[in-house]
View (cartoon, rainbow, N blue to C red):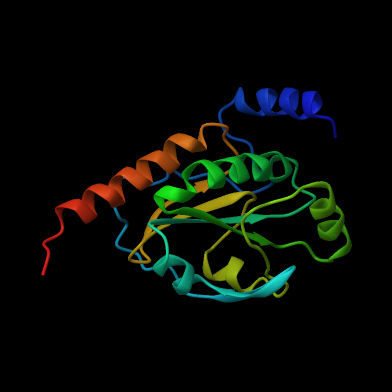
Length: 183
């Protein structure tokens, strides 16, 4: 797809606020407070590279956004380049993305990745085990995880305003870390 078509589609999807492929969106918890729910750890293979373990990525970052997506999901295809831009913009502050693909087959995923270059790991959940553990029922779903591996927020559906949530999550963790007693 050409960029003007994607932009027009993004604007159409933004009009109602959120767009997703199936499922429904409950009211997410506000970014800026922990849900006190520990994010289940996982290790998944990268499509091109070594396996990635969530706890290792969390140890190196302030906020990890775990994104569940599929090639057949139009909003996912729009969101991933946006997430890549946020990964580049906020990476030095300790923000990263783990994109977990849940397609049935590899051919459409490989084709999509040939058309798009991402700077974050693209992982494969071929058995849908992580998707089930995170109770993902619609795509895209984004799970914000802090440096203590606690879930800050679930976001179901695509919104072009996700950057505000990234900023809020980083500010929350930075403030908490600044206020933490030093030994």
